[in-house]
Image (cartoon, rainbow, N blue to C red; front, top):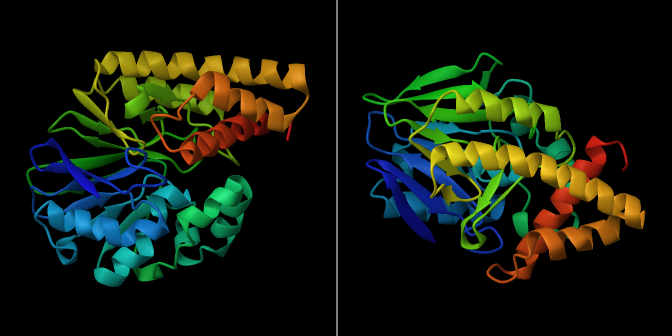
Length: 298
């Protein structure tokens, strides 16, 4: 487990999904109401709580948990965190809030999307309905004291997707609106994930968030963007469309999902090393299937 400081009072916690440097959650800990953004996967609940303590805070002191969207690598430990903090406020889009209370459909959908990888992610439990705060498309602002977090609706990766903007620090938690930044490989990947990935939606989300002109950007996959912020938006838009064209071309050449996925892993990602081979396998599956489903091929 690794905790790292992003800004004064803001910490990332590496939940070590498959490998280090793949997935993180973020703790805002300098104000009246400590808040965690995202909840990692079910199998890393204890790592998240250990990480909170490593940042100098007891998990019982948390006031809020903000979930950027319903995918299990962002909501998995939510039920365990509520077990530890029974009065925790759990924010999520109102359309997918019911899946926190009854995650059975979410779990089955995730098993189909992730295949054998799901065993490493784990099955999340239920969050009591009284803890869930459903947020509409208009978003909301959470007052932390001297800081605030604005939930900005930016669908595309998923229909319920929020980015989180901390205006006082000019810090953007981009969630997967821009994609996934794998630091050890210095690659920004597009956010293609079954079942509702939408290329046009992601393009609009990139454009919307760019108007914030953030000083720094952090990703749940993974960590802080190390380059100029403008470059993050430019790269996200370029890679979104480059992968789209590349994957469609490979599929037309091979007429095979599996051979396309192998080509994505080998020729586009090439992540192993520095990452464990399961990381390359996981993301090549998500990207291939996400784009092919968007084009109604699978």
